[in-house]
Amino acid sequence: DQQVKQNSPSLSVQEGRISILNCDYTNSMFDYFLWYKKYPAEGPTFLISISSIKDKNEDGRFTVFLNKSAKHLSLHIVPSQPGDSAVYFCAASAGYGNKLVFGAGTILRVKS
Amino acid sequence: GAVVSQHPSRVICKSGTSVKIECRSLDFQATTMFWYRQFPKQSLMLMATSNEGSKATYEQGVEKDKFLINHASLTLSTLTVTSAHPEDSSFYICSARVQSNEKLFFGSGTQLSVL
Image 1 (tube, each protein chain N blue to C red):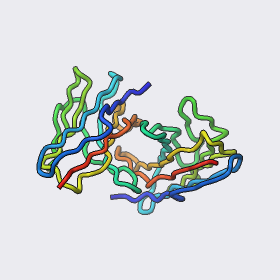
Image 2: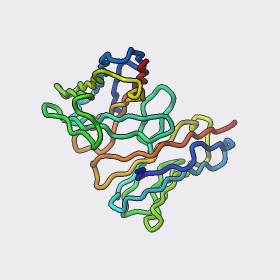
Image 3: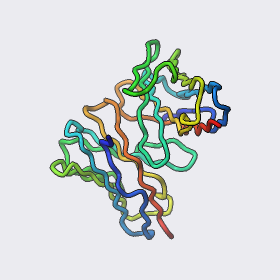
Image 4: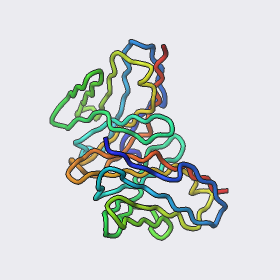
């Protein structure tokens, strides 16, 4: 039972364009969402988060949007850079600091 | 950011042997460490949560006698896969959380292959 789903296994984007990574969840108790980025041979690193009281959180080139009614969130990267090429994991928790449930990840390739 | 070191990065073993994976927080004290497993094309699945000095809390469906977790200090947690079988072949990754900070810091993972 996958509570957090990233339906696109991979995404390819041209440098300078926008990358949009999507994530859907099924558990209505989730109220805190995070994105992690993972390079090969390294562990995931925290990228950006959003709590359910917001619908948008922005940090530089990265913006996360949350649509609670649709149980959907997305990560926008603009402009995309080759160094953004990595696996991006969406994660959710029911309550701040509680255990995280991860999606399967999306491989982003930014072409120069 | 905080650094979590995980060793070994890759291990190949024969069926029936035990394998120990170490997870160390290098520059902070981790009151809580988490162990995840990821099969190909699937999500990172939480196996267990370990708090320093107490027994680990295992997720449903994870055999505690097969996956032994020890968190003897604030900087070290170990996962031992006992009597490993080919179906245990997976990517195992640990993470640590500083008290009152929700961010997780991950190790680089261990790819276990059981022949």
